[in-house]
Each structure stands twice: as structure tokens, then as C-alpha cells.
Image 1: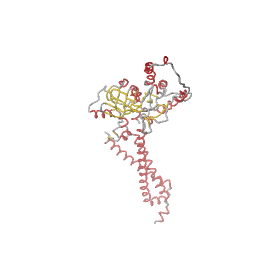
Image 2: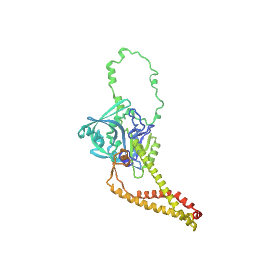
Image 3: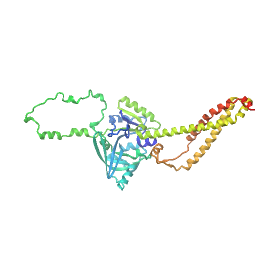
Image 4: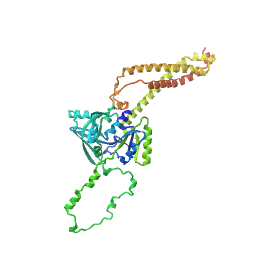
Length: 434
């Protein structure tokens, strides 16, 4: 969670309402088709003032999310492209480390490549990248091909160096908007109720009639060319919308993540902003879901191990009870009640549990100390799950108490059946055996 929240998603995410589930990396439904553009947040310029006054938010940053092919000389690759405001973005995503260059250059057409992409490009080119050299970003969407140019301004890295993070490019928001057609002609209408009725294409020509114009009053070819040469209206709707953003990432105040989500939900719902509020897992998308699936598989495996341990212990304790049936019968014969017999076995169980748990903790602490330098991880899923390439075992008071409680629970469960057998032994049974 820490590696995603502090490097990519923030604690809470705001996005436009959509029937299609989108993460920062795009459509969450795997389809083989054109890139589906993430809808922009309607009226961001109007709601940004309200976001400044949120009580549970420490800071926030808007992001334009896209995907593109990256071309740098002979190098060709693909990447997740984030148009950002450098100053606020690096406050929300505080774990992003700047390796080279000045992040402020992003606002002037700059492109920051992730350290993994830089290594790939330099290996392909056989040289080091130079600040200022041209980078081309391309995207095919909605039947058209978009091409935008930027200049290499520097590189950045992440603590969690895995596939999703190694293909991230930070760019000038204008570049990202141009790639996904965030133009004035494609802005999201905030309130669709303003459209009184749906316009039918045939209605436009319903009352059309042929007219005959005298030659003297007709348009000349030069006049038509002059009219068609005026592209001011077309250019106006083709201008990139400076207020169009795909997401807003929030950094919550300490322990206020849930309060911030509720505050945003109430605020946006009351003002009909047409937005959705999500947690960090929704923003991380499939990459995080795969990690949680792996975590669930580990937990299921641990449960099976615990069940196996309980069965082994129960079997050993049943044998122990049967071997001491004469002693139990004798104690019952001289007046020992069932609670007394049960107490003996439970006390023995707890003594064995506590002593064994203490020995286990001691051995674990020695092993943890032996590997204090860290265990290198090479699997991407494991790196993502543990939040880094090196796993460092640490013995904490919390883990010790959790281990003791778990051991006590296993010991208590294991003694239920053996104790029930012990209290059922009758003195007459022992006397009958001579």
C-alpha cells in the first residue's frame, strides 16, 4: 500500500463518473481495440476552489492519464503517460525520486522518463541520453493517430521497481491532453439536462429547398475559397482545454483517509459535480489486484498449514491421554472431578505452548539477525507485494505478541478433543483391568 500511495495513487482519487471502470493505467476491462480515453473531470476549474478547503486533505494534485508509444532515436517502447503539475505532484507522490534534471522543466514541454525506460533506451542507443533531445509520443485512438513532441528533461525512479512503475513517463499536461484529444470540442458536458432534446441529423435538412441564384449574385470560386480558408472556428474547438484533467490525487492527513473519502463524497454529491470518489486500490488497477490475489493465496496456504499443525498436535495429545488413562482413572477414583482433570491437561498445554513459542521466537530472532542485510527479490509480484526489491526481516513487539496469541489459539484448539477423552475415563474402567 505504501509503495502505491506514496508513488502513484495518493490516498484518495477523484475521477469523472463513468460506467466503464478506469484506473490510472486506463480501462480495467481487457479489450483488444483502440485505446479508450479516460473521461475528463467536468468543470474542474469550478470545483478546484472547494478542494482547497477540504479539512482532511493535506494536499492534492490533478493528473492527465494516457498511454503512448515512446520514440527516442532508434528506441521504440510503450509507456503510461501522466501529465502533471510538478510541484503539487511531488508533494502527493513523495516517494518519487528525481534521478536527474529539474522537475520544473516538465511544465515547459519537458518529459521525465522512469529509470527503467532510461536504461532500456540507453542500451538500445548505445549511449547516454542528453537533456534536451527530442522525444516523440504517439497514440492511436478513435480512428485517428496523434503525435506529440517533447524534450527529454530528466529521469525519476520508484522504491517499487516493477513492470507497472518502470513504464511511467511524466510530461507536460498539454502534451498528454493533445494525445487523448482533451480539446474544447471534446469537453464533457457537465449537465446533460441542458440539452432539451436529442438532435436528429435529418432534422437539419427537413425544410431544405433548392434555390436558383442569378449568376451575378452567385459566389465566385475565390469567395468560396476565402470562406473555407477561415479556420478560426475549427481552431477554437481544436485548442487543448487547459482545465481538463483525468484524475485528482489526494494526500490525506494522518489517519484521515476514511474521513477524506466521506468528505469528498458528501461535497461532490451535494454539488452534483458528476464525479466518483475511490480509494488507492481502484487507482492502482489490475497491478494491485494481482498482488492482493497473490496475498490471498499465501493466506490460504498458511491456513492449510495451521490446520495440518492442529491435526498433528491433536493426534499426539490423544495418544498422550490414552497412555495416562490409569493415572486419570486413579485420580478420578480418589475424588478428582472433571474440572480438575481438565485443568491439569490445559495447564500442561499452555506450558508447552508458551515454552515452544519462546524457543520459536528466539530461533526466529537469530535467523532475522543473520539476514538483517536483506533478502533480494527478483519476482515482480513479490517485489510489488513487499514494496521493494529487498526483503528485510524485522522482529517487533507486535509480531511477537501476534505469534504468542496464535500459538496459544492453536494449543487451545488442539486440546479440546484430547481433554474431552480424558474426562470421560471412569475409575471402574481402570479397576476392571486389574
